[in-house]
Amino acid sequence: MKQIITKSLKNWLEIIGGGTLGALSICVFISVVFRSVLKIGIPWMDEIVQMLFEYLVFFGAALGVKYNSHFTVDFLGIFPIRIQKVLISINYVVTILFVIVFTGSSWNYTINSIGTISQSLSISLAWTNIVLPISGVLMVYYFIRRWIIEIINWKKESGKI
Image (cartoon, rainbow, N blue to C red):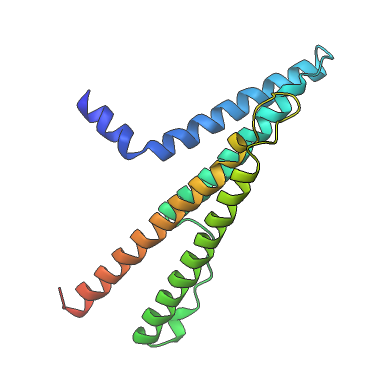
C-alpha cells in the first residue's frame, strides 16, 4: 500500500492528465449521444469539455517538458562540444524566461477573470484559466531540473565530478 501511495505521489501529474483525458472522453461521448441520438443538447457540457481540454493541453505541455518529449530540431552536432554546451544553456535561459513571462501574464489574466462568470455553469472563468499559471510554474521547474541534470552530466563527462 505504501508503495502505491509513493508511486501515486511521484506521478501525480500523470494521474491528473490521465483523469482529465478520461473525463474529457466521457463528456464528449455523452454530448455526442445526447445531440445525435436523443436530439437534446446539454449547454453546460460544452463549457466542461472546453475546460477539460484546456487542462489536458496545459498539463500535457508540462508533462512534455518533464519527459523532454516536445518536438526538437537538433543541429548542434555541427559545432564543437564547448559551443554546443553554451548554445544549450542559452536555449534553456531563453526558454525559461519565456515561460516565466507566460506564467506572469497568465496569472494576471486569471486574476482579471475572477469576476467573469461563465454562461452555462455560472462559475468564475478563473477556474478555467488557473491551469495556465500552474502549468507555467511546472514547466519552469521541469526546465530548470532538466538543465541542472544536463550540467551535472557535462561535469561527469569531463571528469570534474
